[in-house]
Image (cartoon, rainbow, N blue to C red):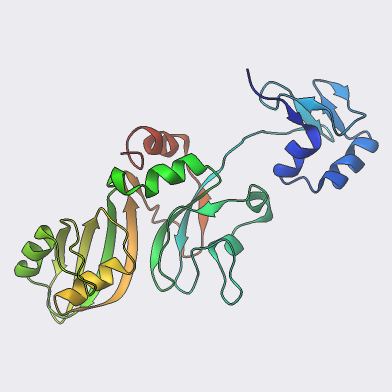
Length: 244
């Protein structure tokens, strides 16, 4: 049995204004529950089994939202920042009403896959170090990336603070003075990809996250663009990808 909640709280959380705004809608006779006009905005209902209509339009209730974003450079992976734009600043008010937050982080100058949600349990599963969730990055590197680097990454490299990384999979797509690679890691240490290459004497000049677990970036999304995850992608997160 689902827990009942106040109507004004439900609609406020869905982005229909403040509780005062909802009270105004009720007062004007604009809200119906199961075909009956509501006279009290504080009534408690089961949002999953009740049919809510505002001005004749049915309200689709959902507790959680899941967004995929192609984060651009210069944007902070945070809910707020005094100086810079955040990933939350890029989404519409419709989604901001759910109070989403980024799952994990990407450096300010790193592009690519970012998941935003208000599902704290999912976030915990993704971020838990015990889960060893794979993250795939595309990078452009100043310097010749070699087969020797590949072997070193496979064994784990020593970072500048003495930490030895877990084994990582390095794929070399093009190797010259400006190399192009894919790197798969299971950790998320601060600036880890950049520090791993610095450990072998090379510098990352461009970095983009392509996948987290089984979830891959929709490359039709332009920088700064986002969309809701499909049902299949959410199932992938729950059953296979991010939860493993």
